Image 1 (tube, rainbow, N blue to C red):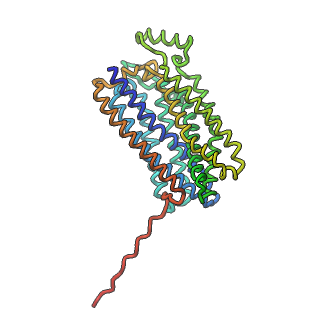
Image 2 (image 1 turned 90 degrees about the vertical axis):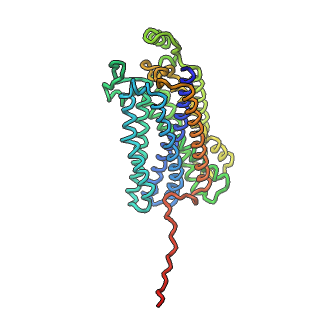
Image 3 (image 1 turned 120 degrees about the horizontal axis):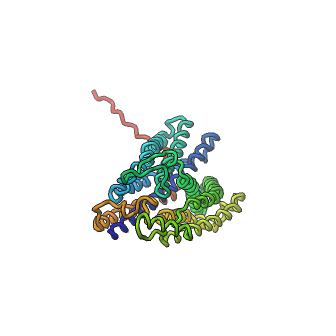
Length: 415
């Protein structure tokens, strides 16, 4: 069972971590596209309208591939972790069902209308569509984090005959562990999109593009987003420490928690694994680097000429694009791995959540299949983003009118 449990955990870590990379950019980029389209709609700015098409196309690419990773990830709840559904499905599954029915379906439907309604709908209606897409994307993230927050800090339930039953929906939805994590993800997504937009703009400005005004404005939006998000993301992250499990903190609180768990569940290793601290340290380091870049950007931002001609600064912004991704994955390791050995903290052990009868051979096969699939999806997404980003605004096909069909020749009747 030990090998199967480890493989199942590593497999879920791979799929969940990869999926989250898509989610962060989707959340942040959707917001920036919506704000840019608002500016274009209100002011009639042609350059902002072109920015919506260019950055919107990159957003759609990332969203489409990210959806596939999310669907594949959720298959594992039935494949490898049926014990979680059996014991706590009525509580844990409720916010996930709301995410699918209330948020995801609405988001994807309105995104389709936004994509195919370009120049066919009233400009204000079209603007409303992207805001519905953005807000439902945040709602989707909120419901997912409600489910995850319950795993971290279970509230609003009771255990009857070995099964968790929801007793207080308000406590579940207002769980501080979920609300603070949601705020943290919101600012993390904005940081990711800000660095992404500034990095792509820096790439084109470094190549001395003819679209100077386009990418100068894009660079300013990206940098301003980074500057406005880098402090809130660490403030909200710090607030979460008030709800960190005692077994992560160490000291007397951890000793008391271990004694309690030992009395209730028997002897075991209830302290957070050492890799959780590694994730915490790496996350902090990445934030310090992002803060440095934000301070440099704060100096550069008032001077438009520097944004256009500063080749070293352009390289810095290109190199800085991975920073928020590494920070997010490191924070995820600290949050999720640090909860071990619990699937639901203090309620259900991870080993007890594993599907019965799942052997190491079956998990090894699924692990290999998932690894190949996610590597392909990640590679395809990176290739598509790089391809469309390199093309620049002239190659944006989003909202472009279809090519006119050649006229059909009319033959004169022959008598």
